[in-house]
Length: 181
Image (cartoon, rainbow, N blue to C red; front, side, top):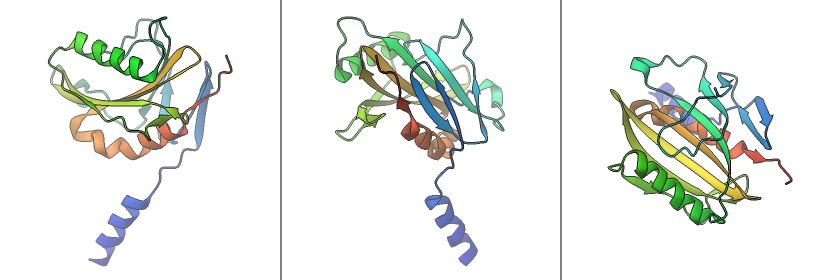
């Protein structure tokens, strides 16, 4: 019984160790040893809340894609149109893009006054989407800086979403906008 309690306490209190880092296109992000960065392909278009502009994506090295269900984190940068100048406007644009792809998607706006990305005010959206036989849970966090929207999207099979959330949250916390323009 004591072993089980200690194991639970260790699991709750253990912070993922982010020992590697990637820096490119004006962003930097740290990630665990058991995740790997994947170069985006030229024809990659992420369904859902993704505007495009993918910089890099990460997947767990040991993850076996069951029935082609994805588990990944993508980082994205897009130039804003002249009409989108704020985090709030970018959030509404993200919601409309998600709804455009799947009009029945129920999007939860989890933005609070303390939601940040790279220490800047940010929006946070979560939603589910069906992709073939896969029921996916998605979290998108984005901010606006220097005429660009920076956002991270975490996509996982619903059954695996919570399992990978601690390293994902640590990666999001480590994300830094390094561009000066």
